[in-house]
Image 1: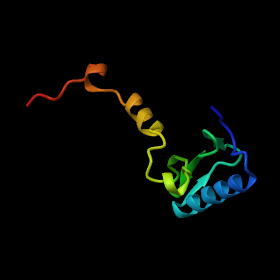
Image 2: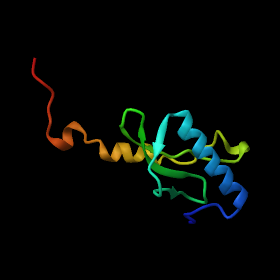
Image 3: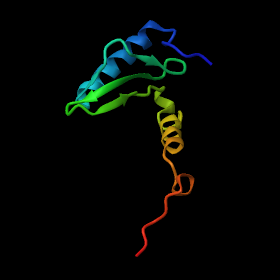
Image 4: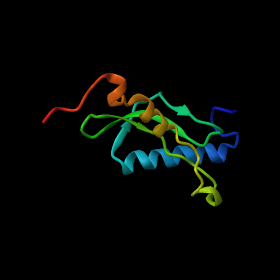
Length: 97
């Protein structure tokens, strides 16, 4: 498994440009010096803030055109499921009527 920038400088430049474009399109500001490359340079993530100051995580994914509809990963979805406590695990119960 390779974590880090893509080995090809053109791909790295394209990924950085895509990240900057996405940052502008979503009106978020990435915190300087805090970038994190994903597997094989397919993703470039960084903590960010929205225009209203809400914390966010910006991680556009890059894939070859012929694999654009292919499932690359479910990391964010898996993390959300793992960090969202269920009613049974926290001992919460539904209100009585």
